[in-house]
Structures are given as C-alpha cells and as structure tokens.
Length: 261
Figure 1 (spheres, rainbow, N blue to C red):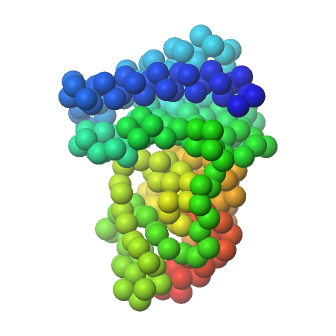
Figure 2 (cartoon, rainbow, N blue to C red):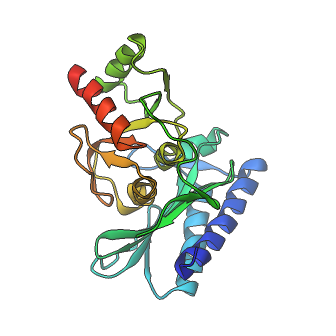
C-alpha cells in the first residue's frame, strides 16, 4: 500500500469500524425509515460525520456520502462514502454490513475500500494495482465453473425464478442469498467465495453504492456487467448487475441466464 491516500483512508475506516462494532455489541442504536422506506440508524449518521471530518482533516479533497446532502464538483476529485452498506443487516445483528469508501477523479474510480468490521475483512485496491484482502492478493481461490451463486432477493423479478430453475437442473451447484451489503457480496466474488453474484437496482446507483467494490472486483480479474455482458458504469448504474470472478464463469453464467430470460 504505497499510496498515502490508501494508507490514511485505511486507518480512518478501521477506526470507524470500531465505532460500528461497539454500537452493535452494546445495542446502543436506534433507527427510523427514510422517504424511500429504507432504514437509517443514528450510527449511519455518526460514521458519515466521523469519516467526513477525518478525510477533510487529512486531504484537501471534497467528500460526499449517502447520509449527508453535500454537493460536490464532479469535475474535481472527491471521496464517496457509504457509512453502513447493509443497514438492515446491522440492525438485525447479521455480520454482512460494510463501510464503502472510494476516491473518484475525472469520473473514474482510483481507489476503493470495502470493510466489514464484523468479520474484519478489509478489501482494497487502487487504479493500476491488484486487489487485496488485508495483505493477501485476490482471489484467494479460483472458480473454474459456475459453482456458488449469491443473489440479492428481488421477488418481483423473474430472475429469481430463473436462478431456482438453474439450481434444480444442477447447473448451479449452490444458490445462496446472504443479504446485507451489496458491496460485501461483490467482494466475496473477488475473494473467490462465490463464482457469481446478481443484484438489481430499481433506481440509479450513486457514487457511494458500487464504485469501491467495482474497482476491487475488476482489479482481482473479475467482471461487473449487466445481463448482456456490458461493463457497468461504476458511478451510476440502473438495472441488473452481474458480478463474476473471471471471464469463463461470466460467459457461462450469462449464457445460462439469458437462455431462460
């Protein structure tokens, strides 16, 4: 980690993770629902403020995040923060939440961090580099075929029926839905735990939603595409995302899905 941005950002994110773990361990948090019917806790806001303050004290760079109304000039570099991706998982004491932090310059993601404080899995990468979990290079294992597919449950979409059909036909060896953070699930593909992951965005994703995980997956040799196999925009995307650990399993999985779709 030669990049000073990454070194300092890692320290900040790990300290934020300690705050999240302490709040959950002591059950000292509350939550309300936002206008889009998704929950927000007081810890989301606390972590947003904490990371924003630390980042601004360390770098002369703009900061934006899910839990504030900051407006940034996207023609200049900026940091994007999701303080707790997978808030429901945090509330229900599951261990699949994560902190997302990315640095974006000229509409390109140049640094990405996804940290799960409950499993202590720290995924990171930077432009032109490889992806790591801690000090270990990703992937930790190689998927040579479509084996374990993770999906975000979207009952209103026929894609779930298709996945179940593929599982019944034994074309997918294992089908799971761990829920929680989308970016954590994406990084588990980069890790090699899943061969593929599929999720759906009803609206346009924001810079803090996918950007950190997209660069981590791609720098690990993986792919993040739509159902047609086109690379998605890491900063703004609407619709399905398909995450694959390598080109072979990408092509195999998309062929399966599109045959049924």
